[in-house]
Image (cartoon, rainbow, N blue to C red; front, top):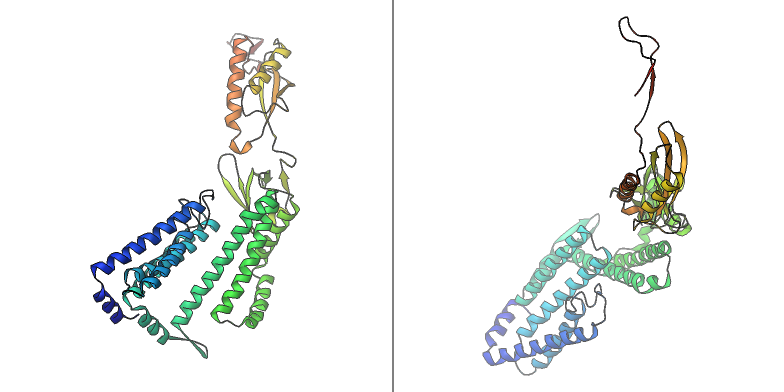
Length: 426
């Protein structure tokens, strides 16, 4: 349909025929919404087909597109059609936008680049829909086909490049969709270990993206035999500039396969202590209790010394010390310390808090309270501080002396005229 056909169809529209098209369009939209509502009742909120509110997924514009196109073909036998043709182009653009948007949000939920790609696809889809509605799309495509770009001895039209890019993007989106579906529907139930699920997810995504890239290159018209030259150049690059990058990627898969460290373990790397929150293919994220996060290259976790503080479980030992007077009852002090530790909700009951007389210091008896927590990522000082406060209040209530530091000063000689003092206690 060109622009003259559009004006001719517009002149043939009357009130009676217009209401028929509007009624058919409303019926198609209502039926599509009802089907989506019926089949999407028990679907998860992150479903690509149904979305968060049933009608904001991919299924609604696809059903509306199919039903509207059928209605257009049926009504076309009786009268000129304009509204339904416009609705078909609108639903087609909406389906393309929803497809890219839902897949990108499912695979890259917090990526700013994904949002940029989504907005770009939206603009392209709506501009194409408007051009098709007014009948200018064939003329625009013809002009793009006449614009040639030279690549060596070959010339490629701008239309071919645009169509190839869109085809490649479509194939890659399908590959990402399949990888995301396999991860959510199969790996989450078949693989219970989080680290093994991570490596399986990365492997499935890498394989599907590779296959999708090969199909996309074929769709664009690239000869795949030319990739042998690219493979040789990539091998040379890996041997020199990309050696560290390749080592980090390989180390990431080794860590996930060996499971020497796992997501959730508390580790100490180069003096930085924290909990592993994620293991990427190139680096590992370690979050400290105060919120600081460190990005550790995977190669460092393989080649350097790493302390895994929770190999068997997440029990984390903390201590606090206090000095009381020598005349204090040892058993009473130990009971006060253990009760103060057990009263905190984050302190584990097994193993229970235990207090020891660890040192005879110059100022008094030094006791150390040992207790265990299971969530060191939530902080250590915020559980040690209330225990210290409870110990201090209990000791004061029991009239147990907390001595001040004492030092003995012995004076050997004094200047003339100063009274002689044998010794003074400070």
